[in-house]
Length: 85
Image: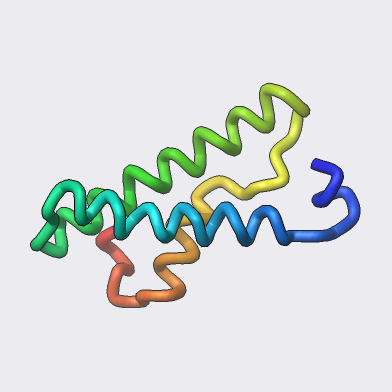
């Protein structure tokens, strides 16, 4: 929270990148081969992101993270996901 108060986003970027790496790990563990399965993994990790937002709100009354930001990041990175994610 202190970082956010100072306008820094380093920790948020690190979380986003780690969760993006987790997409690859989960897909390998589940032996994902279809696009629909990758989309399901992305949706699952977006739910995890939103759960982290909720935990911040419960602890601090406000979250430094935006809900669905993980989904938005992936839709920006891969516009072909529009309507699927």
